[in-house]
Length: 173
Image 1 (cartoon, rainbow, N blue to C red):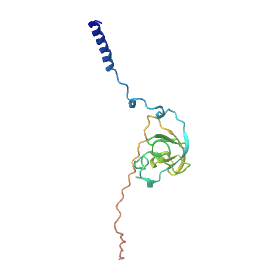
Image 2: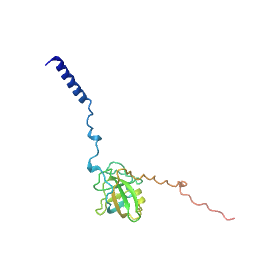
Image 3: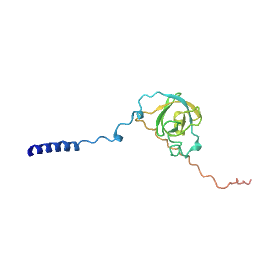
């Protein structure tokens, strides 16, 4: 081959390989769409069941997720849903709905599906019942938990006396 022909081939190969070097790298897997089993399609069918509420004595105790239980947050316990899952819970009697986040395991009663926080039970209108029929389903992808309710402010009262006082006797004139 002639030296000019070799030079042309070398330049052509260099341009070809150089162009490939500047090609876009493939997208990393983390930037790709989530797996199909993670996507939630709307509408989900409502599942029926029973829900109870946490007892107030659990305030501050650790949940299965590691965070402390708080009465004023919208959270719930479920036996098998992944921790952090958002679900919509509805009271069929009054059509009230809330979105709660699963942060604990339970309930430990075999006939119940959910243990609701105090705030969620109050918002649904089942606080006094203790156990109620509910409907629930996975929340929509763009849903967020119902905002937490601020703990009620205690009414300030005059301080109680430290010592028991006896009433003074009045003298008759």
